[in-house]
View: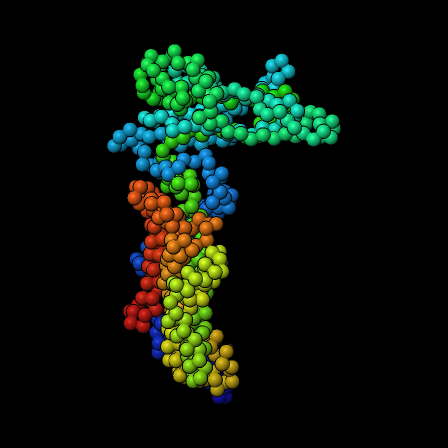
Length: 492
């Protein structure tokens, strides 16, 4: 009979009626309260935007851009330290030329044959509507061919109807192994990739044939200016330009792997570029899942470690409590930042090592809160009843004490996320972050190293700084709302 009464007591609402919201709140009622909180709604709205950015980064942005973040060759087609393109609306002055990057998928492809020569032409159309000339241009290409090398020719059809032939050359002869040449005499086993730059001497040489078309002195050593100039006045000729990249092959199996056209400009993309030509919008988008990973991993791990550690210390009491809390005091009073700097410099700057170190130094704060609450809960009647029923200490801790602290724990997790993100950003800003991946702190570190503020490159500083602030604000607002709702003085 006694066991039956005790069991009924354990299932009663006594504990809820005594301690109110801080230890147990109906899930449905708690959700309704969250949705009625303007603070929580604002925080959740920002968080949804961050999650959307994460999904976009994973789905829409090539993973190769993440892996090649520090490879200069990957970003060679992009402009150096270019402002965002939305700053180039022309409302307060002339429109600067924008970096235009076109690939094979943008080309109109035409093929044919003449006197046994296989001819493939890739045509790129550009509607040039800017008030300044391109800073340069570049034509990348890649072909595959056999023993007889192909030739390449580039012509530009201007909006005024004139056609400038600006480049023509033969590619290097194939040099296959003798055994391959005899076995596969017509196969395209030679692959060649090249880039035609506007500074190429042969382009200037070819443009000399068109100097007489201009009514004013023109400088063929600046092909990007001459090609895009009006004939009768020193102005930009606006309109549609067509770049024909023609390849002459002498084997039917020869082919064009890739082609392209890059017109240099001083503005590009949603968030501009840095000194290494990297698209900062890609870095900002990839930095979002990394920040969420660091913040959530560190906060979840440290808060739950602190929760379990503190509850065990508070419930067990006496020597166990004394010993555990002395270890906690040691972690609390250690100078975290200098030690983190020393350990990251010694162990390495991997993002996973940084995350583990942040967890090691982050759990101590949650321990004190959970211990103080455990000291109150362990003396309540329902805990005493469980002890009388023969429940083990671990069963009482994990079934009857820790579940009552979960609402407050969720608030602690949300509040701890900004601290973890800021800690990683601080280490990266000091040059101790993982250099292999694009984090917001790493972007700020590189901007600081390049004196971006002094040079007026605000787009290199403000976006990552705002993302750190908004992410921290999002979780701080959510944590504040949860903390308010779990406050025993909060009136529902």
